[in-house]
Image (cartoon, rainbow, N blue to C red; front, side, top):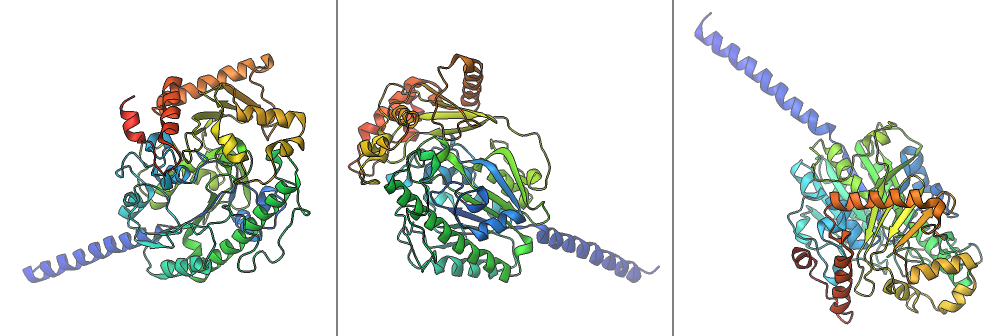
Amino acid sequence: MSLVKIVSLIAILLFFVMGASLWGQASDQKKKSNILFIVSEDNGPEIGCYGAPVKTPHLDKLATQGTLFRNAYVPQAGCSQSRAAFLTGLYPHQNGQIGLATWNYAMYSGKIKNVVKTLGRAGYRTGIIGKLHINPKSAFPFDFKAIPSANFSRKDMAAYVENAAKFIKQSDEPFYLHVNYPDAHRPFIKTVDKLPAKPLTGKDVDAIPYMGINHPELRQQTADYYNCMMRLDSYIGDLLEALEASGKSKDTVVVYIGDHGADLLRGKRTSYEGGVKIPMIIRWPGAKGGQQKKELVTTLDLFPTFCEIAGVTIPKSLPGQSLKTITYGGSPNWRKYLFTEFHVHSNHNPWPQRTVRDARYKLIYNPLAGEMNPGYAFTMGRKFFKTPEAELLAAASKQVQMAYKIMRKPPKYELYDLQMDPFEFKNLAEDLAHAEILGRLKAELTSWQKRTGDALEDPAIARKLFSMIRESGTSKKQALDYKTFMQTQ
């Protein structure tokens, strides 16, 4: 064979090898699913598909197409704290965002691994619509940003779907789009854009059960909260329709969550179920549809899940687990205990707290037992409710009145049977019949605190944190320098 023929043959072989390699790379690129991550404000699972008396047809349909998680939680019931947690995959005490960004609380460092950087390096276009609400903002280098304000006045709501459609259609590269809606944050606006078409009134509903008080003012606030939820459902329906119109729906994993519970009594800013329990629905192309799962899941599981979608290695530092196997109908070896925490929201309500729950029982640990919880007075004040506290409590049963007394000045431990008492009205911590359960959950909580490097395992440090936050004052949006505080402990 001549030299010319040999060279030609080698060239042809290289052409096919390189072509196959490039085809393979393109094929791998196509295999990467897009991610549409939808987050609503200040709402728990008060959605039709979760059994709430409110019409949410679009979210209900999404649940029939994917997986609805019955026991989904955030690590802390506050906006910045929750958002930093699901974007870093770390508890607030691990990433440092223990309070509101608007009060200048911040993560320890902008160098902490997060969803945006990880997916960006994996070849994803990254976009955010709506507020980020985490410090430092520079830690999250989104390629596309729109409507950065909280927009609690709900102005120009059509811009959310318009920007989303623009971003989705911008390129054929895989995308991660994080859409944040202002509903159902206070103020509970009855109608926006003529939505909902038939708003509810206090005569149509009972107050949310976990408040335990069915007072007329609480019924009206519940009705307007439900109106926010129905409007939210309409906006999410528009967003999903835009995704469908783009032709990319079959290649997109859709994740919907609330960032924490409603801003009502025993909800937001507390460690009760009304604060930390949220809706979570995942529609994953090719996965099992129409299933409801009872596993104890947390928004810390989302970062590992997004990593698995993108085909990147899950950082070993993350305490969460990927939800893929569950959404595909599997039964993986799953956690038996789930943990949440609280530190501070604004400086009005510092109250260090830790919780653990298993399939049935929940323990709340209050290291500042004996102190008055400032969050109680903040929530019960005239800022949120016109009716005096005494009148509201007069409408409650004796057991519920005792629950509010505990909330006002908590004991060291609160123990609840979530099966028999889902709204946490009867504290069993001093019931000798539950001593074994109390001891087991205390041991699990202590073990978790040690594993995750939680300095508040020492109640003296918790008390010092509480005192220093209070000394920071509430006249300015001035945060305790938590990073420096932790370095000195």
